[in-house]
Length: 88
Figure 1: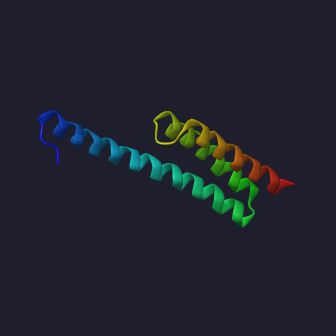
Figure 2: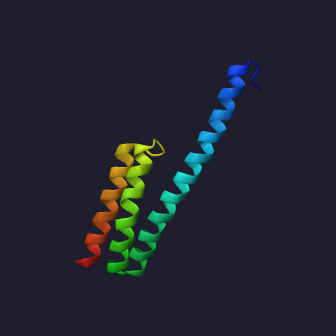
């Protein structure tokens, strides 16, 4: 347990930041899940539409430090590739 005043404040800040990051991560995962569900259903139009909404959400998460930038780019790339394969 934190003893000093500054350590206690740091703990409070970490808790607030963690709560915000949890919301951002959850929101991003929800958007990605919608794309994956459309892909599983084989609906290319729905997948493309969901992807349009998911991509900025993933990049925003990367920008805010919830996700590493390369991880976000890799996930976006793989989803785009899966949508492209669906049409072929």
